[in-house]
Amino acid sequence: MAVDATQPYDDQNIFAKILRGEIPNKTVYEDDFALAFHDINPQAPLHILVIPKGAYVSWDDFSAKASDAEIAGFVRAVGHVAREQGLVEPGYRLLANTGTQSHQEVPHLHVHVFGGRPMGPMLAR
Ligand code: 5GP
Image (cartoon, rainbow, N blue to C red; front, side, top):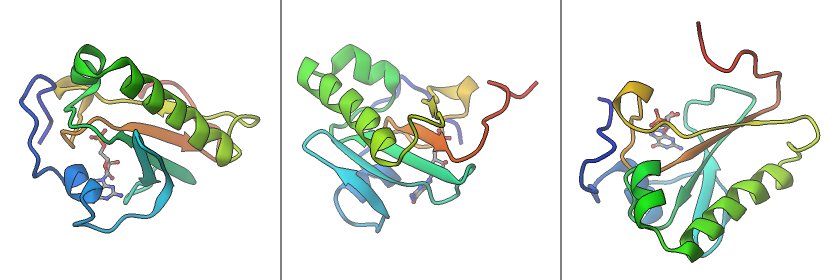
């Protein structure tokens, strides 16, 4: 079911469980602010999810409430992952679904990093 981006944080969501180590993941990068791991259902040859370690439902919640250090750390982690995966020269796409109309499914902020093929049009028509 799509997430309401303004709902309170649910610490039983799947990414909270991944952060607590209760569910396995294929980690590609981790630091104090972020965890990056392969999407379980990849939609491109490379499909990585980057999530902040803090409890934020959505981009809206994070951008409004996270500290400057958390925001800087998270943004730098996304860039680091893309560089480390060799995606800068060929190019890559970032996506952060936020709320109902975007079909956000997991109520913990995540940025999708897609790469490994031409990404095509920005949105399905
Ligand atoms: P959203 O639609 O919320 O932007 O994207 C949620 C993403 O999380 C989907 O691409 C889905 O495949 C991924 N996902 C859902 N459950 C899991 C899981 O347990 N492990 C991993 N690695 N990815 C998951």
